[in-house]
Amino acid sequence: MQNSPATLLIVDDEPSIRETLAHVLTEIGYCVRLAADGFSALREMRLQVPDLLLSDLNMPNMSGFELLSVVRRRFPAIRTIAMSGSFSGDEVPSGVAADGFFPKGSSIFALLRIIASLPHIERRAPQPSSPHAPLWVHHDPSALPPDGCFTITCPECLRSFPQAIGAGYPEYKADCIYCDASIHHQFAHPADQMPLEAFQRATATAMPLTLRAPSLNY
Image 1 (cartoon, one colour):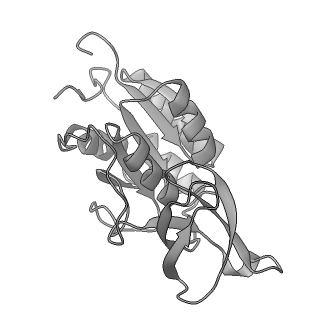
Image 2 (cartoon, rainbow, N blue to C red):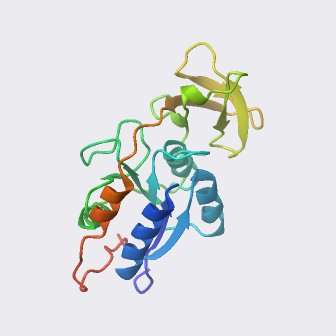
């Protein structure tokens, strides 16, 4: 990797946000690929595993909460950064399986500092699931279908299946109908998203041409 650009996968359901980030990060030396949600991100990772994953948390289909849980289990060597406009501060939100956190609206310099400060953690093999590290499921109670079911994706086999909301909501266990894996999960509810214009203004901050992508070599 000494002479190769670090590969980075950006996952966000808002095209303008992911394209703005891609443009800036490509200019400073990253090899950037894009995905619109968790499912498309997993397809990209099966084609080529990136060095770094930058994922929004609130997305349709498969949210960033769920994607990051799957990535931690299936692709443990990938360094991960969660991003959202719904949390403040630079600490990773509780229960989110990420190595770093980027608040949307912060400058691109803040993102580069986060990338440069990612800890070096050896994760050669998938870690077993735990009640203390639940699978997060994006769920909007107002959009619940008449049958009272939601869709959950198994972190072991990556297959989706319907699951009824029953006793113990919003935190309980389900068994995958495909591989029988026990899945401890919690629900993440949609939050108000920051105005796109504010995000674009923050990420469009002028940068010196001498900027380079932080090294991911440890």
